[in-house]
Image 1 (cartoon, rainbow, N blue to C red):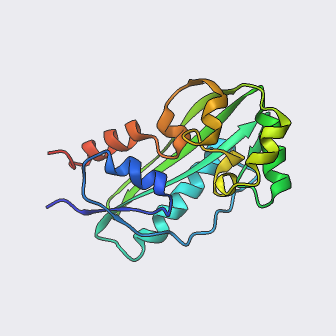
Image 2: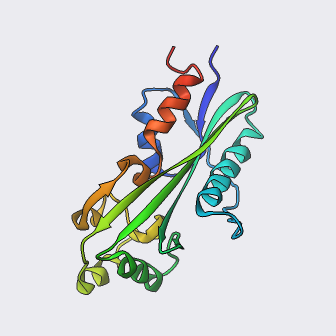
Length: 189
């Protein structure tokens, strides 16, 4: 008998991606603190947070398979998390305007007898964003629950000229990695 599958995320976007896999799953939001060790590489930091989220849910659901994830945006070695203010959101959009940046999404799939932790990265190319459009954008709700202050499937899509890598990695869950690991764990037999 296959174990129950749980997504350890409050993200509606991650839930939508999981639904694409055609598997039954439940959502249980992780209470893990998103603490990043500055001594680790950016990739290691995001994997550490994804694993912490999955472990937090696994501790009360040890008979299940838990999918945890975390996403960061990185420009010139600087991590852009979720903005906490209008000023911070504006600064992030100004920073990525007219430039290429990197989105790194980590995936942790854990059970009592299995552990898979990996990451995927995609490079996103932004066209220049006029200041007056940034000013309007930061007045909306969209930037405040997203790393880098934007969603590829939202307002920012009109400024994205090209991506190198997986679209779903930018949305917040590397679909190809989730599918490959769950298939290996017997979810598609």
